[in-house]
Image (cartoon, rainbow, N blue to C red):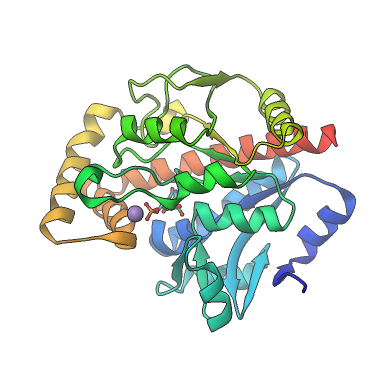
Length: 304
Ligand code: PSU
Ligand code: MN
């Protein structure tokens, strides 16, 4: 049985040549940002990966295939499909067999990247343990995927809408290396610092690639989380973003927002409450993660 994967010509060529590839997710396009900034950002992120010497592979499900690399027309079609399914491990197969269009979250992108032989993936921020998880049980499947699938994920930490101490605790339990890049503090998405120390710190892409390769040699399941702080010029300081987060969270509770709708709802409300600043910060941090992802992919390709 062959895998239901379709490669763009650019990604197919990179695979043939053993050239560095960086996987990119699509839920950030369909559920994470409004149109047209979502499309513009997706294009800029791809350009950033190319400028840094790697090939971008944006991943999405369409017409019964997992597409590894999207041409520009397809990217635009996806960015204009707000009713695309939000795919995690649980829905990937059902979306494929139904023929529907689906955008991959961190979890589903990791699975797809691994099937395609891609070891590095850049995004904005991973899902994690939600505040109030002790009663709601809302814990992102992204955390469990990091424990299972051997892909190094570059993110600006976990989104600050989450319970960050619980998120770090669970990652430790699951055996996921959490590596802060260039600082000791675990970054909090829109802000560089969370006030929580990350368990590991690395200061260059080569070290991260070496640890990735060593995990493979040891036969360890699961990936690495590289937590790359947002560039200083783009950050929203913690004291400024926290009141907006609290308000958005209170509204989500009052309106009974649950399951997959929680993260998109909170991102949209914080966008409105910050007058669009949270989106600017989000775009800057994704571009920054794309650059680091490309550097790690290049270092990995050099070790093969
Ligand atoms: N990063 C962003 N914006 C996003 C996401 C990540 O900058 O919208 C998406 C990712 O696809 C991640 C998902 O997997 O949010 C988490 O959703 P949940 O909390 O429902 O697991
Ligand atoms: Mn959830």
